Amino acid sequence: MTTRPGMKAWITVQFFIAITLIAAHSQAEIISFQQGVNGYERAQDTGIRWAYTTNFGDTANYDNPHAGDPGEYEMWSTGAGRSSILEVGQFYLRTLGSVDSNRRSIEAGPSYRYSRMYIRFRDVFGTGAGQIAPDAQIASATLKLFNTEDLGTVGSAGGAAENDPTCCDPITGGSLANPQAQPKLNAGNIAIYPSLIPIAYGFDDGTASKGKVTAKEKRRGKEFWARGKNAHSQTPNDPIAQGFKYGPADWDDPDINPGEEEIDSRHPGAIEIFQDASEGFKEFDVSGLMDFITGSGVFITALSPEGELPTLDINYGNAYRSSEFGDVYDRDGNLISGASAADIATRPMLVIELGRSAIPGDANSDGIVDVADLGVVGANFGSVNAAASDGDFNGDGQVDVADLGIVGANWTAATTGNSATLVPEPGSAVVLILGLAYLGRRCCKHDQHRAQS
Image 1 (tube, rainbow, N blue to C red):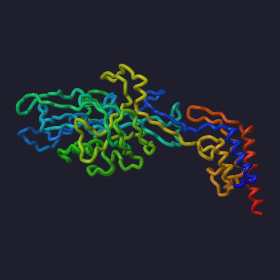
Image 2 (cartoon, one colour; image 1 turned 45 degrees about the vertical axis):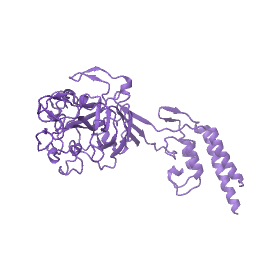
Image 3 (cartoon, rainbow, N blue to C red; image 1 turned 120 degrees about the vertical axis):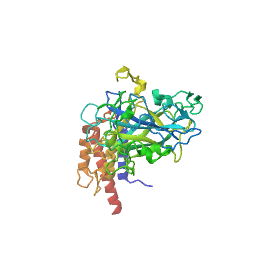
Image 4 (cartoon, rainbow, N blue to C red; image 1 turned 30 degrees about the horizontal axis):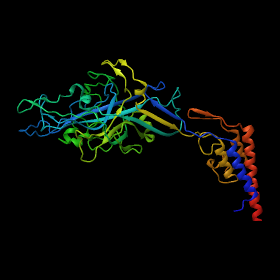
């Protein structure tokens, strides 16, 4: 193929541009929010947890009507104390079930626990140090949660955990073996839905009071979900249904009235994604939930396989290190010892990538005006009905010398991410290149005209 002289000139210009300027690789500006890092202390997360004894009241010689017992501890409540681990999923609790307050039986079991989580990052947007400008363009947002071992039966129930063996067989009065789940890593389908209502966060033990959420006594009330305590009566002795009937009401819950919705699983930003059992950060694209995760929060649950219940060996969900991970408090909420840097690094993290700024002359919207934008102008020089992405920066529909001037006037000493990269000033190499590019393009057009004559 024969290359015309004008085309040679244009290729020369392009080559000259490439070897004369080394433009920095453009990285989007990324800002992370994590409790205890760079002065950020505005993350909040909390758990909702309840237990369920199947076949409640059954013994070897008595078949209870099977209403079940969903209120063993921490039912319809928020604020898992100053907990370092927040479970999300369906977990096996113990082999035995409750006959009454003092007796257990194999026939009444097994018992399960169901755990959910809320999380939010406050004060992300604003004009203060470390905040994102309210009008900033958000390219993406990622929630990172560190998966770790679940609490196991003893860790989750605390003082309410029973021994193995435990007392007492309802027939003989003797002790019974009571295998309990040990801490383990878990996998499951994790769902993140927007919270449509603000909830109460807190960490105090003891009886609930205004402005506080309790730990041991949470079931005395803090959040009274729309469908209420009678949810268990609608699904008697159904441990699978129990995994979904308690906690906040979804948009399509038949047991609530219009306007009582507390979460929205159909929201276009809602997430349902499988997460494996490996330890480490699990990532969730929450770009479509920004108004919620920085506002009232998001609700995180786990979806068990249809018809499946957890066993001693298999649970369905994940367990995440909380925004309090590594801190140790007394019962009054006073800090006894702070977390190590390694502990803090595994707390929940909200990572936000800012969108590219609309700078005049920035044809490819990467936040800087550089040789790449000059290439766009050169490739489209002389075009009509053009847009800014084609190099028409003054809005006249044409890519011409006026647009070249805008590129030169806004040539960037770019700051991207955490690094600054300086490029030549418009008065020197850029002006030269602009002129060569313009002349090269004119030569090409002149040769094309001659060839057609």
